[in-house]
Image (cartoon, rainbow over all chains, first blue to last red; front, side, top):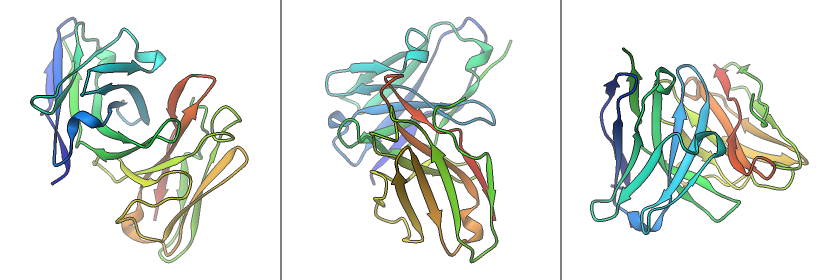
Length: 121
Length: 109
């Protein structure tokens, strides 16, 4: 099956570091950009950034530049989203999604089920 | 506040036709294509429409997309209870140099 499988829910404290994952299967993971999308509780979708697993090239939306770290391991078909200093405002659902199409006609055609991150002291 | 403006809510009865709008500008919809995503309650978003009016395989032809000038629309005909979801438009924005989603429209059936 073509799918993206995300890691389970996480709870962290302010100031801690955290890393969540997104593992692809059923397609050539290295050849498609992976996007990370944030959804704050009860709110809409926000694109955080992209990573190309083939060479770990990353691009960030302006609002998220410097706030998170994106990485990927093409040997295990896994992309990662990481925080080094969690804040309560990072509490949200985080989705990974496969990006298709060519700029600017991108689309996100395959989504993970999401990872809920809760930051609380 | 997103640069792609959607009505916060829409509603219809089973069998009706409903349209959801997405209003932008020449830095996004006016010059770029639009996607639509459906997010059923408690689930991940799903691609519903790409390049304005292209349906991925598996999306029923009850769903259709269109674009005119700086606005786009998603139409759902033969409304069904399982269509009750949040719907998001999305596009690239040249001014922000970023991919943007609309604020979302909650459809009640």
